[in-house]
Image 1 (cartoon, rainbow, N blue to C red):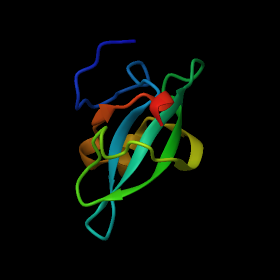
Image 2: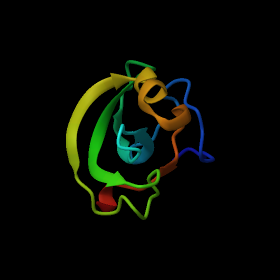
Image 3: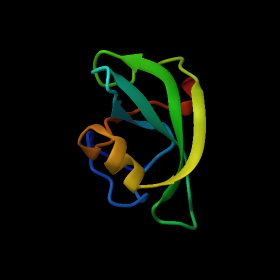
Amino acid sequence: MRKVSYPFLPKSNTYLIPGQFWAIPLKSNKFACGRVIEVSKEDKGGFLAGLMDWVGEYPPFAETIAGTKTLKQGDVQIKTIHETCLDGMILGYRPLEED
């Protein structure tokens, strides 16, 4: 696995790792959580993203999203993180196998 320091602003999918997550601000002043599910090898900006079954008062942490399931998945581009995410940053990592 690549060495990554969190938070970081991804410019391509080069440093994306399945299990990384980001905060999605909601109109209710709460946060949802997006997660990297799979990274495309053919498309340097593409990846499979998951919207987690999680809402919190604060941005997600690895511990707070433990045990959550994916509500929806879809193929997206890196700009999806930039446009939906709090500051466009990947906040952390939690192995998918643990959930």
